[in-house]
Amino acid sequence: MEFRDYYKLLGVERTASADEVKRAYRKLARKFHPDVNPNNKEAERRFKEINEAYQVLGDADKRKKYDELGADWERGASEEEVYRRYARAGGAEGHPFTGGDAGGFSDFFERFFGGLGAGGGRVRGFSRGFGDAEGVGVHHGGRAPDLQAEVEIPLRDAVHGSQRRINLTATDECDNCGGSGVIARQEKRGNARIIRSADECPKCGGAGVVRAYRQLEVTIPAGMTDGSRIRLKGQGGKGARPELNGDLFLTIRLKPSNVFSVSGRDLRCQLPVWDYEAALGAEVTAPAVEGKIALKIPAGSQSGRVMRLKGRGIPGRGKEAAGDLLYELKVLAPTDMSADERRLMEQFAERRRSRDVPDPRADLMRE
Image 1: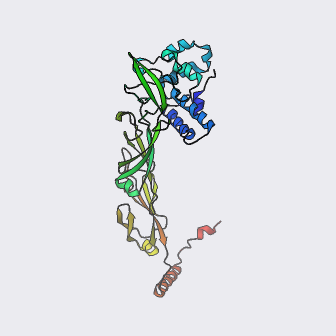
Image 2: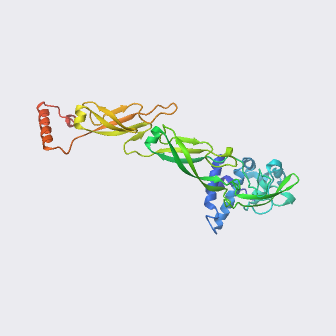
Image 3: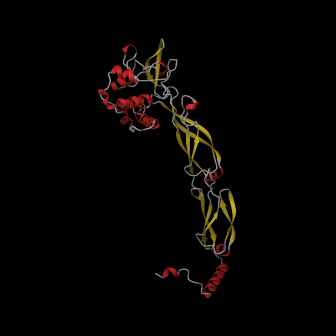
């Protein structure tokens, strides 16, 4: 009886967290699901193998027992002893279900994680947490996974905050089977519950997950930067009960602006000014996130000069200070002068030359 390396089957490390195991299982289940691979025997075999692996690694108790058994199981206890030590599942924890084929589990699984069913029948899986009604799902009973999503917002929403409606496509745990992928049918015998069969869940097709579509109203607080995350409690994967819902972590992405570049919380704008505005000084109208502002340009300003308005960038959050609003001047020379303007410009140039003004390119000629 061959030892099955369930970690290798799911492609995870032995140190993988429960969420990492679940993500790996769901990814592989979607890839090899029979509905996606009709008449593909190899895909069907892989689907059964990964379901078997997840039946063990997706359950904390069974995973612990599997890790204790390890590859040296042949030198371990007898089948009866293993059953007593590792597959004791009566009372409130349910009973191994018998009869039927709930996914083609291997002899290794049956022997060490199924035990002996009622009447000595072969077992085909392991479950816990059954209710009293027939046709109940095999519930894992754990917290549903957290979900990740992104939303792109314009710069003004990052500065001022906003309300946004987002459409979320999620992969939820199937509420019909509790995420197990199978529906177990049981009967009571005294205080014991005997699981007579386990069929593929008709709602999720055995994958344990279903596609869900939700629309959420989200408050975007002021002060969001690119990569900021918002936690929406209980809006992630859906669990068996509301308190078992996962959370939604919403990553904020800033939509590129035609006016401002963003560096952290600072906003920078390339501001064109005419040469005479830069030379004489002027008050010009400059763009701002909230509209327009009046900006004073000091006389004698050169291209590349940066005008800083402290605290006028993206607002701070928590202990982080607000960013600054920076204007980098770009001095422009007129190109559409009239005849009179050209004549005045020539007079200006002649007067500059007569004053023996230093050549601005002199330093470049010294090498």
